[in-house]
Length: 120
Image: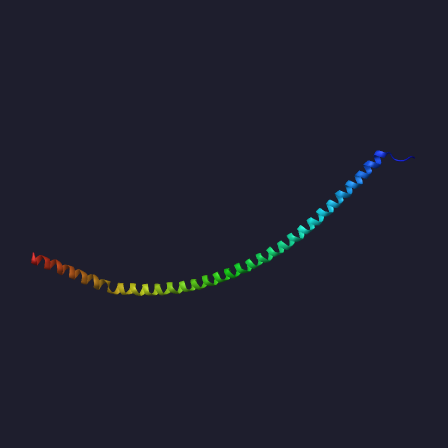
């Protein structure tokens, strides 16, 4: 066996040089990707904390709104009951005195009609 051809040694040397360059570039890209991944993980953790903070605030606001709604509902029920009781009392008064008031109005109207005929 003899020595390999000169072109083979040239091609092999060129391949090893280019493969070494590609390996170095690949390692640099891998390091960059790892750094970017770490930055993304940090950003996601920060966003997760913010989202959790906002979620806590929204839950607190929802609880406050629920308390206010319950309070307003209770007050509204009380007001409606008072209005209903007063309306019932007013209707009772109207029912008691309506005939008397209607009768008085009729007498006054008839009296004004008769006075009008006497003068005319």
